[in-house]
Image (tube, rainbow, N blue to C red; front, side):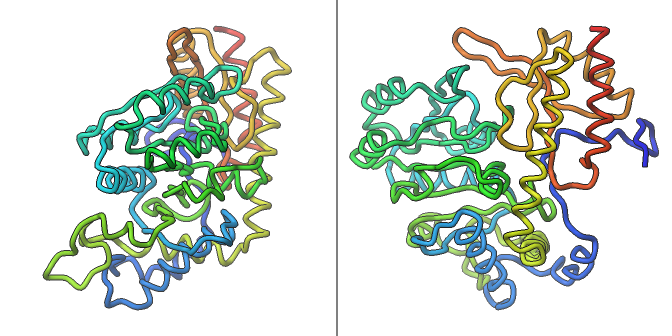
Length: 377
């Protein structure tokens, strides 16, 4: 199969975090398309939600010491927003601390919820916020901070946690009742399943919520999950609507059960061992692309720890030139433009997912196209 730009044959999308789902599952689960995820009278749909949350909690995150509790929502962005709403109501405070690698949904949610945001620059050597800086901020704003947002699997670089969560930080958060939230929308599946590092936040009792987006690895668009440490925190959302016997209807009364059913069915079909193989293959292929590019003089912005390949360029003009050239050859890529107090990181990125369109032959074709175009910059 070849990929060319054009009205009837669009360019191959190399930047969206869209995973994979067998066609037979898409067809088999079609009976859930018009069934409502929030209809509490539909016992089968309620069971799917509980099983999905349990699978992610126990098998993907391996939180065997934690009760499987949470919410099945429309997206990771919605899950982040709900976590911030819960934190605002529980703490009575309004300040959100995040990094300049945090997802845009954090900023957008602050705007919607009337919360303030304090964004800290990561160190360009570690791609984490300096520990001393974080301690200083926590101590200075101790009476204002509602939520500390840790990103696990950053959108632009694919790196791990942008904050190091250690015992000292945990003590400060405990003393000030800070809601620790982990945005693992991307990293939750691929980094956990591929065996990336040890994560102190993952087993800490101070991690109140975790966002994970199944569709970034498997399934279809429209399924985000918010894992919660305390079942009672669900009640902070607000009262259910009075005319509908629902489940979290305070967040809306219409949501198709299809994406959740597809996600669960795909997880069960592959099993945890099959999912791990998919994740490791994605990381291996991403690292292969990175090595090939570096052998020809291109640079990757950060060490490749996931399926994301961040490629450094020198200017915004170079980004546009390379993006346009790749588009003409049938590949879409996403720009990188991250600013800190004393730095700016520019480039493009691609994301290797289990989606068949990201197979090795297409990745090799992309790599060759990028190398050829970059020679003419």
